[in-house]
Image 1: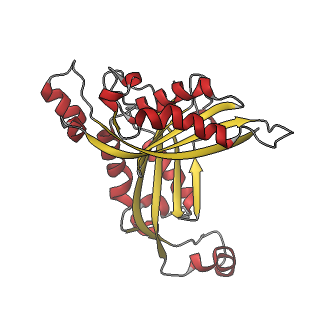
Image 2 (image 1 turned 60 degrees about the vertical axis):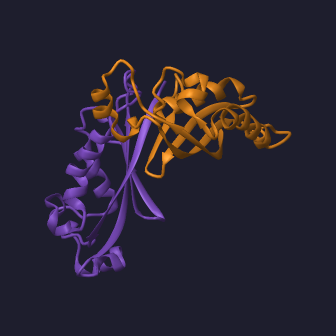
Image 3 (image 1 turned 120 degrees about the horizontal axis):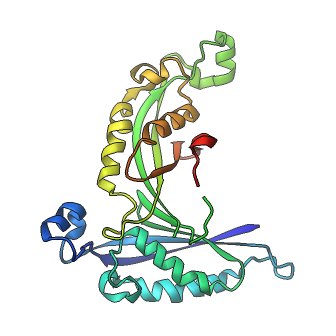
Length: 139
Length: 141
């Protein structure tokens, strides 16, 4: 098994607010992330695909194909967008790094044409990232 | 969905690698410059990885404020700007290699109650790092 990882960067805005909480609770739980007009990050996304290399090409999955999938599924949806309002897959969810990583997993997993999506690592800032391994991901 | 959250922290500390079980010559031969008598320092980077289900009401595995507070209290405050060999009781008897420091940090942080600690990754410098995920009996999948 060989793993390949491709990295992209996108910039987006978000805010944390749960309508089931009072304004005070939202403020207390989410702090600055609850500021009503939102704020943004430069997200760094690392997508890892694992599989056996094709003997004819020496590749697990053509990087060009992975690049196009990430461009179409993630960049076009999320780059320079307000995640709460402009990404339907996140509607009704708090766009934490956990939830955004899980949505990216769901978007990418069915599109990977060779090999298997192994890990989605989403950096929200240089000191925070979330790894998603899907439903059956190993520990 | 299996999710892991990793937060990076840093602290600066000095240490000296010297084992009381070895002769002066052996200490010098094994630890080299790290055995110099007055110690030396590093900017350590600690990566703390947690796992758990994201709470549907917050979308979070653990509230980062709670984690930051716990790591600050258990690791950053007691270790930052100290001489590990003398200022941290755990290292009066144990050589403060980065391996041992990594284990010590894991043992201190595994009591975090809001999510399960998966592993600690500790960078001693930008060019070397150590990881510890507990002993077998501590690993629950």
